[in-house]
Length: 418
Image 1 (cartoon, helix red, strand yellow):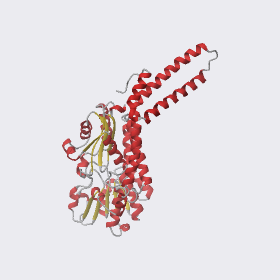
Image 2 (cartoon, one colour):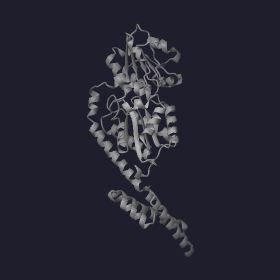
Image 3 (cartoon, helix red, strand yellow):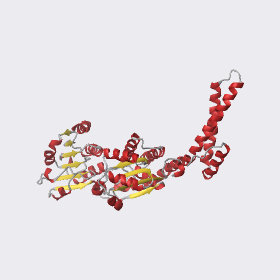
Image 4 (cartoon, helix red, strand yellow):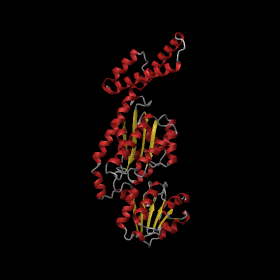
């Protein structure tokens, strides 16, 4: 990346772990909440990281950024989570430069999601970019890259069938309930946690179960009331959680807590209960599964569900990959222009200096010299000259270095590419 004049560091890295090699427990060790992400970004700024994106979802935690060495990013991740370097090395991946770019395209377009075609990651990438931008930890490369991934994602969603059917963990959980629970419309359902996954699950529950016995509980009651208001559902106080669990048939847990919030003590062991834990880290204690009448499933189990819809979506992978390659080619073409950006900038400055000197000379010689007209005409000529040079450099990429050297020599420009 050295020749692209983007960062003081020569390499762009992607480091992280996901559902493919890291189970829910390990992913939980490396999960980051909002405050942890902000703290990590600030520490990255202090340590000289140039441009960073931090994502942490139910099925992955990743950091993208410019650094001297990928260990700088790995160290930051371990410092701000419960994970260790030893754990990370067993399940992690590190991508560099073009591989890192390709990985982000694959992630952002749902091809690397636990459920193929899950487009929820795009909103998380947008949020990650906003967090970094707020701390002045983005750069033109990251902005262009994220926008390109968003563009590819939109095209894949609109131009292929890869997003048909169930495309999220929240839908998969409702699909499981519909397939496994008889007379679901008559069952009592309790949703604990109304974050993004909780809200999406709630919407799918209302839409597909035709159930009017759905109760919401959230630590912040106001958030639950806001979600319930859209669907005319019941909201209970957090203090009533135990009583509500003991009275429910289906418990869906989607909180953002770092430790289990549902333990054996909260559950009435003589009543059948289906529990779906959609949280990372796990929010239902593992020993809850030991209770005879409890059926506990974590999102990893739900994500392995295969059906005709998933099989059908796989048919569209080649189309999606073709779109990615097309958008990625445009991004790479833009990236190539960064090679000559400093020279173009220096050339424009030189031409403007020549223009200003000539106009000053003509003002002294010509009576009633029209400054306004002269500025307009000369600036337009400069812009046309700049466009000619830029187009030539873009169209003759194989000879870019020779062309830049010639421009610098003819116009006596300093070589400030390094």
